[in-house]
Amino acid sequence: MVKKEISYILPFFIALVLFSSCGRNKYKVDGTSSITSLDGKMLFLKIFQADGEWTTVDSAEVIHGFFNMEGPVDSVMMVTLYMDDEGIMPLVLENGKIKVTLSNDQLVAKGTPLNDALYEFIEKRNSLELKLDEIDRKEARMVLDGANLEDIHEQLNKESEDLVKEMNDYVKGFIADNYENVLGPSVFMMLCSTLPYPVMTPQIEDIMRTAPTSFKENFFVKDFLSKAKENMQLIEEQKRLSSVGTTN
Image (cartoon, rainbow, N blue to C red; front, side, top):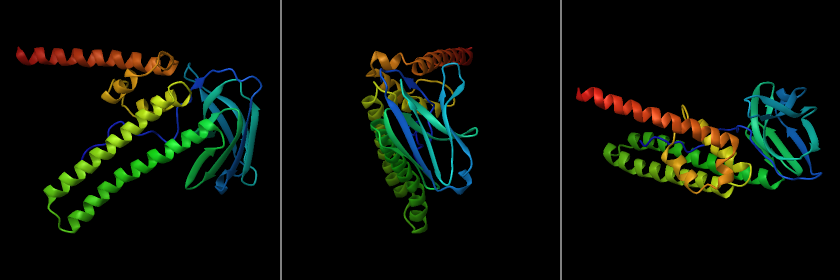
């Protein structure tokens, strides 16, 4: 079976900030929870800072399945909803009313443009991921039905390749569509966080090829690219030394 490439996004995002002039704009989070264990718990909106620390932006107690937060929004922020030290879900703090729904089978934030776009993306990405998982189950069913193993692998490898390409193209397209707002860098960094260490992959190189300067100069993106290029140089040097050793 074809292995999945760096094509999926983790359930919650490293928080990033995109500064913009918002005047006296305000955010209002109206949250509902059907998870009974959350009642009486404190929830926090946290943002990841350039110094590597998480800073609390706002907090609220869940009371009878409801919680509310509101305040001025001088910059559009991608934050993470936390309970204690556990990240629950990402959301964008922007001007407007944000409706957050927490349940055992759904975590979603809707009601403002960037949150709507973010959760449409997450839903689509999750759908493609489920299709990839289904291919593994399909293989088992085909084997039990007595299909030829060579034919099974040929068919399912093609299906896997097509789905991985569709997912990679979708992620790339979403990042490109959001180069100039907080969603682009956030999704890019989650893509990169699935790597064991910073490194340039064909997918990342493809994304950066059309990225504007503002995207490349984002602190987190720039830091990743710097480390990735350093690691690529180390990898090339190790390959060179290895090839020299084998010829001696």
